[in-house]
Image (cartoon, rainbow, N blue to C red):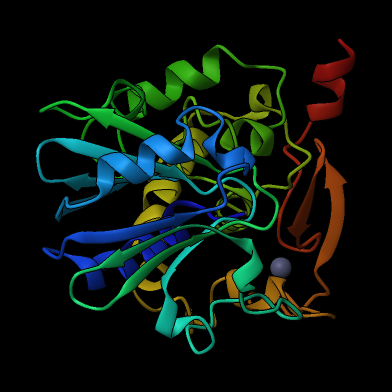
Length: 287
Ligand SMILES: [Zn+2]
């Protein structure tokens, strides 16, 4: 599932159409991704409009066109953005994953400079939305501030933690209402860098862990945007990221075999050797 930096990576691919105008639009008009804005309306509205701005926030992308038209794309589980010519050789596909198939193209914008901007989504949990206005759409304004921005403070984090004491920390990190853009790999990376087992619940954290967690959330977001959003691979070998996708992956810190375990409904990748359960945690739960 595309996370913060992958969404930024995909959105950047559409830079190829910047300042060019939409000549023609092809859609799979019955596709579920058009459940809020009908494909026909999107096609007729975008025709003749020039792409002027590309924004990303959390797991969403927004494309601004001339005359204040906004095209919002949520990539959902399997959505990807690219230009038609880079379909085969743009290769951020996971091991065993195939390049995107043309039959899964849901929206294609044929631009005046000869590029074709493609939104491809095999599973169709993604969403395409249209909005007209001189400011960002209401659904865009509702996305919480970026975790790397000055608005995400230690106090903001503390408030979120205080209101969810019984929740697994890793599950809370996946909650888009508080942590926009964090998905499974980033949450695992944060847990690994803080050396906390994914079995820890929020109430187990002391002040020291909370401060470390805050610093690490921002660090992982910045690292992801710096590396993954620009080139996808390779990420530095001292991240968990590089090792989690391989079979038989080992912890880059101590060489122990990585565990893959269903925790809170998602597969957590973690290292039993260096990620700890906070002491007396079980006692606290029972009491
Ligand atoms: Zn380890």
